[in-house]
Length: 279
Ligand code: MLT
Image 1: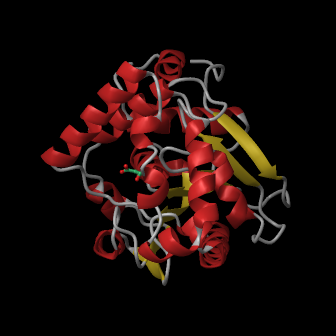
Image 2 (image 1 turned 60 degrees about the vertical axis):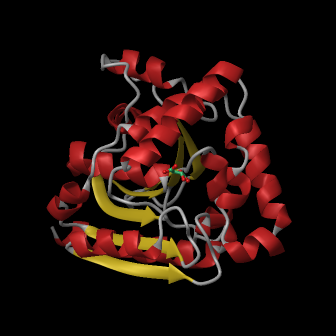
Image 3 (image 1 turned 180 degrees about the vertical axis):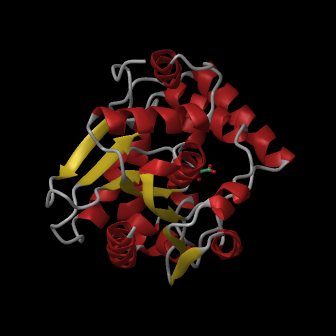
């Protein structure tokens, strides 16, 4: 396996050497740029790395990452996670605090399961550990088929509003405009592959039960896609998790209310740093 053909890791900030880096994994159908609102609020100490997942932003496609890994090319979050791990190791990162929003959270949970030594702290933001039910899986596969057939991203553009909470849908048109812009920048084949990968994902509650490190679970109170009950389910499965419920925000807490997300990640970094120093 080489590190060529691996996901692109953007160094948003070079922090104090010797500190655990923070690795950020974006949601669907976006790329690493969604994290800028949060990272602008983080203090200067940690190195901050934001990944473009396979098929998004500046990264190679899912099938190309699978080929570089020598893995099964079928769409999967396992390929995404293995690609992220290989890209990080290629940059000398053997241990990090990993945080992901929604799709990024699914990948973070796959990392915990498949690369537990890499994860010193786990941030799960507006995401869920459970698999799709049959209806959700069918819808994803229909969306993927339509996006592939049309070779356009239009079918997923409706997410520019459903990703937001009911309040911000009305009061923050600037946010839906940014979400639309970022979505239009993605390639249709990448979006289709990711939908198929999410449709195939297993329940990772057991992986959370097996993880003993520090974790934080953040959820927008108005998140309709990964609601508060899904966040509570992950907190219950984790040995050392804190729950942060963000009022007035939906699924995109990172952009609807970046302050509590930044402060949750700052707290997680401090806990992980202490736990690693004590080990
Ligand atoms: C996301 O924000 O990444 C998506 O809502 C994930 C999903 O479709 O399950």
